[in-house]
Length: 195
Image (cartoon, rainbow, N blue to C red; front, side, top):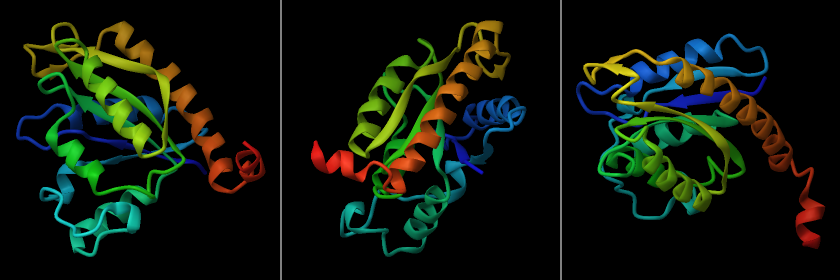
């Protein structure tokens, strides 16, 4: 069965990303076309990237690097829960992605974001990072506004448009995730070699 991780993007006390991830999982669990699991970035306690060699040369040598790499390698696709900080992604999420390389190559990702502008600016930055990591990211996303989808900016209370946006994002993500499984299996190697 296709496995998709719902990855939290924040580790700070009082964060909303785990609440949003649990909400996304409650919607995703109604599907039968993939298995969904939350991967909480905070559980890995990653220091600022501290390996001698880039991830392109393989998983890091330190215990935290190996654990994070192995965990992310388990999945075929990802939903990133993206909180917007200063018009971009959190430092914690960028740092976590800096630990990875081949674990993400030729996989797919979707986004559920939140912030004053729905987290749209953070998603745009994350798209560039994921492109470098050879992740196929889907167009559809769910954007949560701090003004309308949270009570008092702190209690998740998604509006109908936000709820309605999750399904199409997951539809697109599951299709692309399954397509990328074929890419990783080498089904399209001849076509790439000719191009």
